[in-house]
Length: 557
Image 1 (spheres, rainbow, N blue to C red):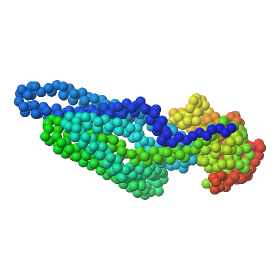
Image 2 (image 1 turned 45 degrees about the horizontal axis):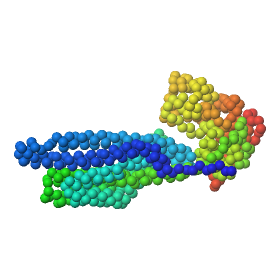
Image 3 (image 1 turned 30 degrees about the vertical axis):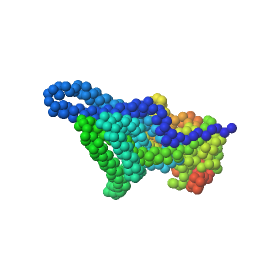
């Protein structure tokens, strides 16, 4: 019986899950938005009526003024002002609380999707950052704006009821103008703002990609006098983004113009239909109608941002779509079959050599599911690697990459990425095996020594050995080391290899070692040469040396 296939959720599924999880906060935000709209409409209408009626009462003489009841209306105005302020605060707090909690749940899931994705390895850091930050922030508007229809609906209802005091024709006309305003805004948004919003999302990702790649190469650009070229490149890539933002701003201005025209139409309607009636009721209807359209403006604003939200969602869903679904495989046994080579079991040692760019790193990245694995060429524990989940495959390996990345923290912080519960003694032991303990002790800060952003406080050889020490700390059946002695002098290389041999003998780990230098490869029982990558993505391998008891032989590459 085959194990079930795990389903791949879309970004829409994840958003719906968060909408359900944050239902209480979203409901509270909607109730508060409705309360804000009702309080605002009634407050303006009542204020207009009160001011006008007070003026008329004053003109009627002292007796009329004394008879005029100003206590109840003024108390109602104060109450409505307090309700509007409190409800607005409640809407902001509950709506943003729901949005922030939803984003906090979405980002780790999207990061996991990048890790599982075949596209994740080719996705630039700028593009990945744009999707995890800007696109997810755009989705935040979806949560914040969920209360907008409730506010608009409550505002129209309150305005119709308030205007009804001046006559039902007024109330009906205001309702129709409000609905016409929303319809016109929707049609205009589809033609102008939504397409501009999509362009903003796309061009923002492209611009951030350019900025990220150029900033990473900033020292080299300065050294070769290419700073001006880099600025020109950024300016050129910024042009489409600026144009998209300008187009979006123009669309927003058109929406504002439509709102102003709707307000003008409401004013004309109220004046024409109430000209023969009470001046106080006319004032009530005038400001109530304006408040109705102001309440509808929040909904129109959400409609105007719909294009950005849709494009951000589409970009995130495209990222999720590249994350494969895998069978819920059982525990993978610790042996590896690479087509054309002897099976690798714990304590086995495989060396991989070849010309630069031939595909050495590609092979180990396929083993660790950092790249898609070609079907039928790599197996783990009897399972085709292409059908195993990345979590299962990566559980077998401790990895020291050729270009190791570090967080901006201390030496201890970076080492504990591999072993969060490791003691200081275990950290020092790993540093000693990587021949880095003397340098760290000499810093005076010990394990608290800062590594700088991406390890820039260390030399290239020190970064490589810190990555090796981190790999030593991860308990896994196999070590994968990609050029572990590159950039080291001969004496340090000999010490690193001596300690690596001792570590392997003590830990019982297997070894997959990439190196173009012959000395590290003397650790290996079998050495294979990589000569390129086939059209199906598999790596061309040729065994150039095999020996049962490694550790003493020498050979030429």
